Length: 302
Image (cartoon, rainbow, N blue to C red; front, top):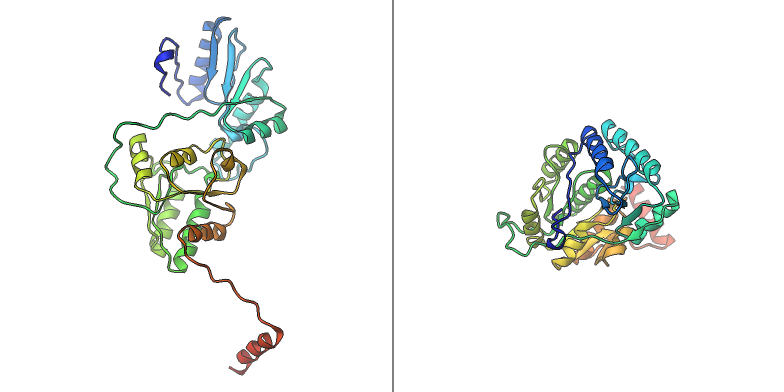
């Protein structure tokens, strides 16, 4: 996060994503903050120790509260989330301000923990300079996302498999990290080879290349099951891309998509893709009893 020029005199302290680094930062914060200071915690968690300042917690992670299925996460990730959920709940004080990015997030936080919050969406400005031009392919769809279980890549790939079975092979660009999401990356490659899917996984991209990828894509597809805000939805909308997204509250908090689907159903995702591509689906027409029996008899005669 860059500090705007109007706030250039403010102190930005970056903390490495480790328990030891966070503890050091917490001791530093307790010793340095004065009564007239404003403390913005930009990473979901309130200060571990009380301090004299006016504290605002920017809450972006839906996993910090409520009921969720963590079975798809590694043991280390589950332990970290359990610790962070306790930290968030036990260290939050009534004097702290919580900022969230959507009305759905505000309502769910109130229902789960009784915490009040302020809705104040934060969207980094899109780059105005020329974006990276290293991506020269054009894609029918793009999904800019990491590979956590709720991002729902498996259902998306199964939808592409169903489309391929119908002879429909739209191109799809993904940004799943090659170095950390080994299982998903392997599954993508397996289905890609087995079903001749037109999928290209770029891995994690810097912002300039992400913008270039959007500009080289015809539509955003966004099957995520859980988001605090859904930043790619807004990024795609800013660039004028049509959006196909999960029919969930977090989506309509920020955009009105052109097509929606049930994120739990690869068939629903595939049908939304076909609607967007103006490909008609043939419905099975019911028959009367006489034709039904005649068809059964045909099989018996054969």
